[in-house]
Image (cartoon, rainbow, N blue to C red):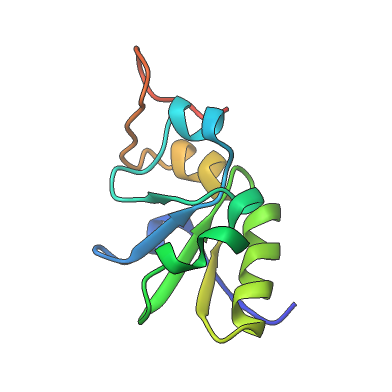
Length: 107
């Protein structure tokens, strides 16, 4: 696989963070500044991606985001995988919000 990976704590402030998990996972808890773009809908929503700069791609544990990074990089984007995904994000105590009631969590 030919892409860069960073730990969740290494995602720069103000970075384009794209969460590729499904809707129920997003609703449970996500990074406050993330953009939701489920991997299953990526191809029909490429127009929603920022056109310039690095894209930091996150999923639950790093598998889906790795696949998305590989595809994006092969198609002219600058994608960086967030290693360990939201599991490590949560364990690291990084900020999260939810679209439901209660405390955010990783589904």
